[in-house]
Image (cartoon, rainbow, N blue to C red; front, top):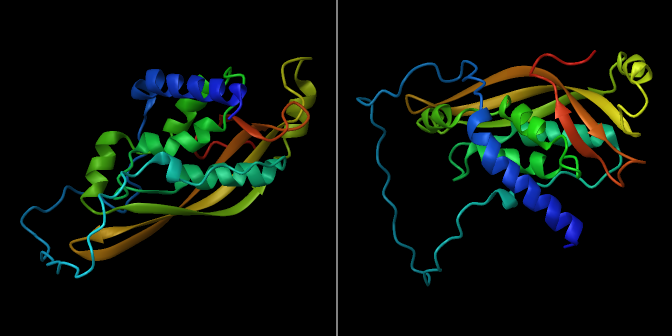
Amino acid sequence: MSSESSSRRLLVMAVIGGIVLVTLIGVGIYGLIVGPPDHDHQSTPTTTTPSESTPSGPSRPASWEDLPALPDTGDPIRYASAVAEALLTWDTMSGLAPIDYARPVIVGADPSGYETPGLVSDVANFLPTDAVWQELRHYSTRQTATVDAAFVPDSWDSIAASASAGELREGTVAVTVEATRHRAGEWFDRPATSDHPITFTVFVACQPTFDRCHTLRLSLPDQPLL
């Protein structure tokens, strides 16, 4: 690992530790889970039969490093689509926390670190708070996403042209993503699913400023550039 990569990773981890605790803002439950768990309605316990095979060692704790990394690409459309999938895919029963699902996007931030504090705040708008996460765990809630479209919005050319010299790095592009979130879980011990559209804009910086794309900022959910 290069000294530049190590320094950037240390910076990212420091920013996450110092900022994310005060910036996590929940996005709600989107209608799949709407009430507190019914403690009087207990599921039937399952019985596990010990295996006859030689027991293996203790399993390794879940880690954010097991999550898919953002692609090493100079294609802003492909990169922004991967950012959307990373932000919108999670599982409350995985052993990971919301901040763990945020890390792949933060690690792919602007290498200078200038935009990282803002990006950490932006990412929090797409993930449940810790309190909501624990509530969703009662229902084994998980979420996946389908990217339906990703494109440079029509307004971007005029925005980029009107920017003063030096305000935008070369290779900075806005990509608006239209996606569908698919939630699944259990409600009274029965499978429950729901789908929810979402649209937002990913601001990325690619070549020639960087040899690959990096995330700068995110718009608010459902407030994209068009």
